[in-house]
Image (tube, rainbow, N blue to C red; front, side, top):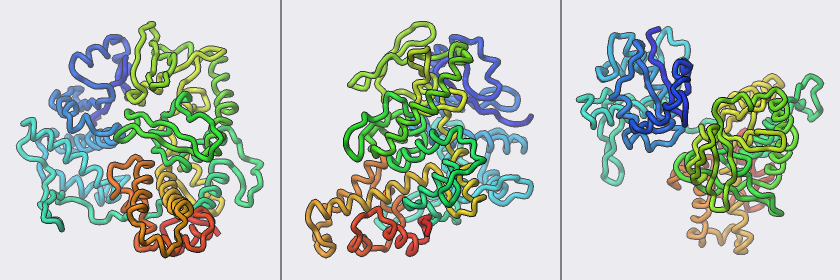
Amino acid sequence: MGEWQLFWTGVGGAPSGSGADVLRGWTDLAERERAAGIRAGQPILVDPTGRVDPRLSEIFRHRLFARKAPGTKETYAPDYRVFFTYLWERGLRWDEAVAADLEDWEDWRLRGEGNPEPVEGSTWAKNLAGLALLYKIAKKLGYVTESPVSTTSVAQADGSTVEVADLAPTDIRSSNVKWLSPRGYRLWRDVGLGGLLPNGLESSGWPGRNDGRDMAFADFAYSSGLRRRELGTLLVAELPAAERRIYCSGWVGKAVAKRSGRYFYVSQAALQRAELYQLSTRTAAIRRAQRRGLYERLKEYQVLRDITRARKARWSDERGRTFETHVNNLTVRQRMSMFVEGPDGLEPAMLWLTESGMPMAYRSWTKVFERASERCARAGLKVYATPHMLRHSMALRMLLRLHHALDRRLGLTPAERRNHEDAYGTVWTMVKDLLGHRSELTTREIYLEPLHGLEIENLLSDAESPGNAELFAELSRRTGLILDVA
């Protein structure tokens, strides 16, 4: 069809992706991949003639690409496929691209006639970052002489210089709405995911098949600030133990986190909703799948035996071979293929399941949120949400709560707070750690933009609780960045 194809290596068997059926008989494929130095989760690009360029495989094995977070690689690889297809249609291979070709592609991506889905500046910035990385590695390995991503040295305030892509977008807006007030979130959740009417009454036409699961996921995300991949691949065994405290702690594994494993905290209320989902909707889906013999027909699966107190996971595969590794190392694909022995047979080890009883791909949550936001729009409500908006919202709520808690613990008045800047620096650090950010600058400048130019003490001076409606209404009015409802 004249298009490049993208596949991903798995943890065994054939690579996942369209057309992978031709390799299902290669039972030793995982061993072949390991012998060739190919890691699980590595992209494979196939040109329109069905050939694989070994140089691209070397690029994807290179440390600069291999060490990127799984989500980053999953973003970059599809962009490579689209760009390579664009070049192919012009009679060029990927290693023949020059700056002029990239300029033409940028024009087509952003403004080109005939492009059914032109992208915004933020998407183009990701396209450009991915291509810059690929051609940087290709140049290091001697596969190209020059990168088509031309750059210019720009002087910084501290005297240093940084390379900026000449085609870097100039229309990226950092002031898009990214936050939901608590009452704005509850309205979106109840109407969009729970099927209630805006007045709080039940809708007679609401099917209500997955509302327990969807509302549990949203509450967990809004409470914990976990990323879509981190929360979406959580195992039942990784749920925090229910304790008599407002927040309970759990652990995010390194292989599904963006950079490193870390502790997370979730409210007891959100945890209880997840446990209720386990006992109701999830159990019903598993029983239906067991009655249909769905799990018994699986050709490849892994049975999770236990997770020790030292976070060592032990499991066996369908051939009886046993394995052990730290939970930190369990990848998305491994988690999707893991089951446990239940009282009535195999059950998925992952927490979130589809209606058919199979593990739910974490990317599917984006569509769930989109449908919920569309439902709110049809009801005349001006509230919407994405999984990442809930993460932003958690950061804002937590910053205000921590400031307020520190005030009470130290007995400070708003005026005295100015003399304790060192102590308040720890509040920003705590929020940074909760989000799993590498830099505090990211937390300050991107996630907590509503507070730019505002003095927190003015907002908290007469606020008994940092989560009350008046506080968020004031932030919404002043910044225009927070979705709130009257």
